[in-house]
Length: 253
Image 1: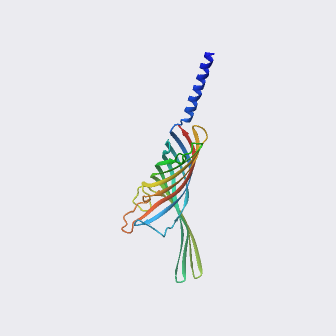
Image 2: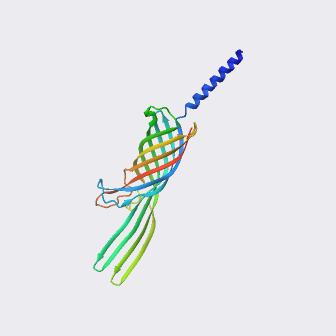
Image 3: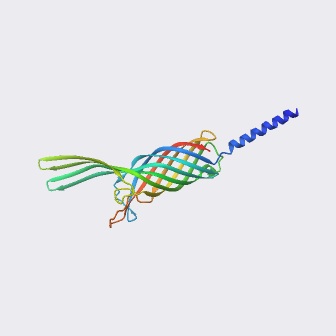
């Protein structure tokens, strides 16, 4: 009888210990995510936003690895990844000279590729609301974004239509090229740029260790994409504005 009671107490203690370990989740985790972004370029002239911005958004790919430390209401995510960011410019020009006219229409596209590092400091919204932790988590964070340029591409596709007395000439120009890193040419790209990133993570626990998530983020570029060159004119800066959505899997360590 005494041995039976001792055995039952030992089993009860083991069950309590197991439950406690299951509830005490590790604050450390890693994740991998893939997604897409929609990038645009903002133009500033001598520090003021330009109302005559010729650029529109262009999609690109993005993936990253992340380390996360989470403790109560606060979390730190450190992202290391690769991002394609660019923009598109519509070209539409018309000029006349007497009986002659010329119309130029088409697109010019650029894409800048980066390896980036971004530590994001966040708050767990369910902890702030006072609700009990469940399987679903939401976190809002903000942090710096550091991009190292690894090259890019440019492409133009133009149609030139010339008309005059008795003739019409149509010429199509298609060209593409590489964008170099660290060149002093204003048409190239800087090797190092900075920005601020706002991030929202929506995460669902599949088990005590595995989760899936969606990460909407917005990058607000703070430094010029391209070199200024030796021009003595106005200081024109091109700045990234990039909305990203990635999804992936997280594993607690």
